Length: 283
Image (cartoon, rainbow, N blue to C red; front, side, top):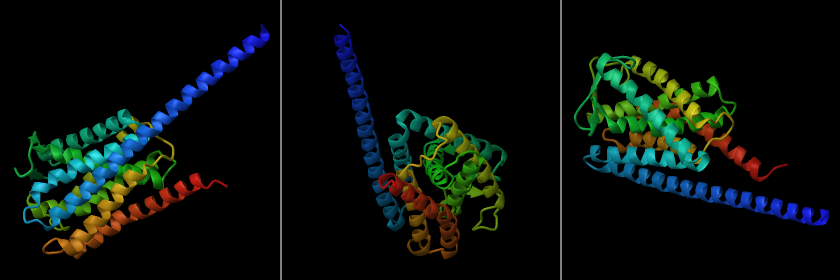
């Protein structure tokens, strides 16, 4: 009888181990599928950006670029955290960005006094919906870059992520002003953008980083390579566009934005590559 009990115990343990292995295998397949979807969105985003740079009416492609950015960011995040956490983190970043924009167009706080033109549609409360999507997509990408650089997490990661996201606006604001998508009540020293705008971006971006950490619940070193790639690709393409594609080119913006985003994109990519190599080639 004791022997039969031992046999049953081994069978039960074997079934449990087999079930656990199947669950792990299924999770890995889902992660790979989400990562492939993210890569597809990233490739399509690059194609849309190229077309927007060479076509005579780039505004028509602006929303498509941002939608692909957001979809790719969520897909890459889902490959790491699962779709529930990824969608929640994206939604939190979108809501935070939208709230800041909604307050901003009414009060001038925290960015300065500005307003959106009717070119970007649909709009909700005077704020284009696609602007909120951009906060979510690049928020996740900047958070991943910061995670790669500051794996310990906490306020240092939030600060790095906020600076990384604000660095993107060194490109974004001059480009959108060129396209006539918004306008400032009082012009500032950086291609018409007031300094208050960047102070506001830092503050809102800090909130976005905190919300992503809170919802995703990731305090350890778990940067998504796909999200780091989104940040790096955006930095490279914006630099190239301002330096050589846009007409007329603006090499000052290319240098400023490229240096600012590159200060995060390069170490993030390097850190992620080193960690990936260590996982594959443990000592």
